[in-house]
Amino acid sequence: MATQALIENAAAVIVVNSTVGLEALLHGKKVIVLGQAFYALEGIARQAGSRDQLAALVRSIDGWQVDRGLIERFLAYLQYEYAIPGSWKAPHVQHAAAVEERLGVYHGQNARNFHGVNPPASV
Image 1 (cartoon, rainbow, N blue to C red):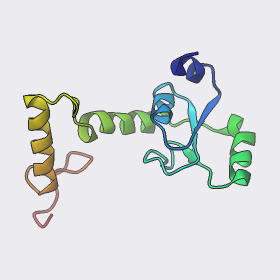
Image 2 (image 1 turned 30 degrees about the vertical axis):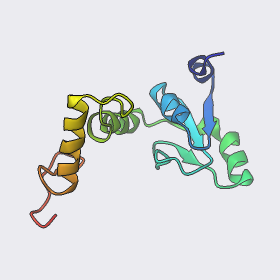
Image 3 (image 1 turned 120 degrees about the horizontal axis):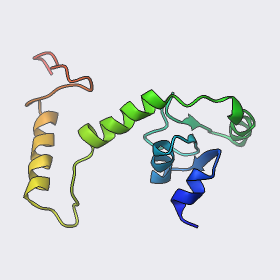
């Protein structure tokens, strides 16, 4: 069975550190992270650091509410601000330009924060 079909038929998805968790978020599913996934953030996914925590999360799963708006903003940030389009395996001019632009942002040129506000000049 394809991963997408499994996710679509799940009440929640449990991952260690996997892009399957991101895929589950795209499908509006509740996600429990066992490892150190970068998306294990409050309001995005729940994190279990022990068997007891995992058991408690699974038992309480029906009481969770998914904050769809927060998840959509997070996924939009990943797509439009964090990820660099293209493939490092087959780079093209646009990919290289996007990497160069991103490096300029990290060195203070054209820098702006998550909300699109210019940071203070000291950054």
